[in-house]
Image (cartoon, rainbow, N blue to C red; front, side, top):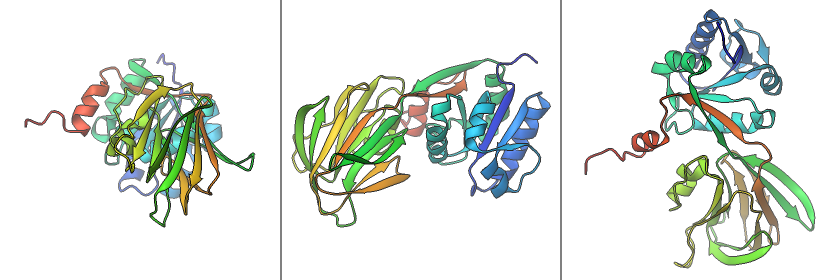
Length: 290
């Protein structure tokens, strides 16, 4: 069998019902096609699967030609952040709820994965965001986000005051529940709920979307993905910065959050028939007759 993807990594969400059967079945299917199959160590441990050689995520990214992620969008967000620096392409199989990132259903995974691994696929490069927290002139925290970096109020529920600068130029001040800085991929996540625009995921852009701003003139703004965004927390009783809703860091008044495009994108592989607009119609119910 001629293929660009001889070695395939498998990662599965640990606590999904039916995940063990799906991972084992897909692994056997791929091995039957002549692929070398590597299973993520944590997946193997949690699901009790010992049929395949295992690797930690970093070694899997090095040793695999592609990695298949079984789970929901949250699983894909986590795995993409881990594997992006290595450049290995990802294939998402949805066993969650939404499926914007994991677009292949379990019912169609064999045909879809076989099609992709046979060379019939569409590749999408999507940017990630890097966020740094600076306090007193020193960097005190750093993380990466696939969807969004959110600076928001903490447990006190009080509004926070922010100053926003782009490439060193002051743009505006905001008093709000917070601000979502989103990649194009993340515009169908939290930013959408906050009234932000939907951007095609391959755009070279970043959106800044206020969360419940105190003034009606505060509106979302879209800037180049190569811009440096600086958020100065001028006042807050309690505030945090969140990365994809999975990592967070507590902020103090006076902190600066710098957000830039990450150095490496992530590549998603889709079946050749994949359409982003079809995904929007399905997930947002745009096809429903009014």
